[in-house]
Image (tube, rainbow, N blue to C red; front, top):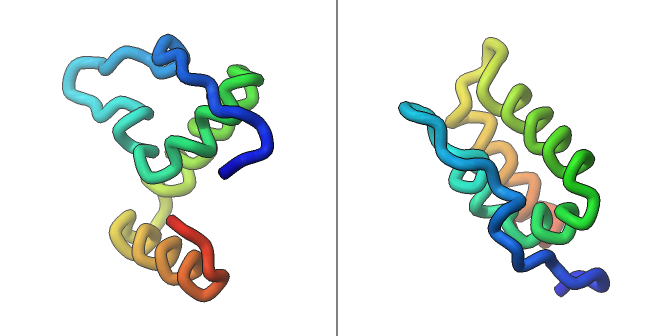
Length: 80
């Protein structure tokens, strides 16, 4: 549980765009983190954009990046 209470307002999450997965769905595993960051919406949106760029582009397959993120979380005893 975070020290700062998460924002419960759903208006922070952008609407789904046709043919695209919403950022809310893409980061469902980190929902608590982004609800806390929602106290600073501009920072939260830029962080989501950075994560989308890192996870969806480049020469390494997104699935492998996801597996690596899970393993790093396990090694550090963190909930993913």
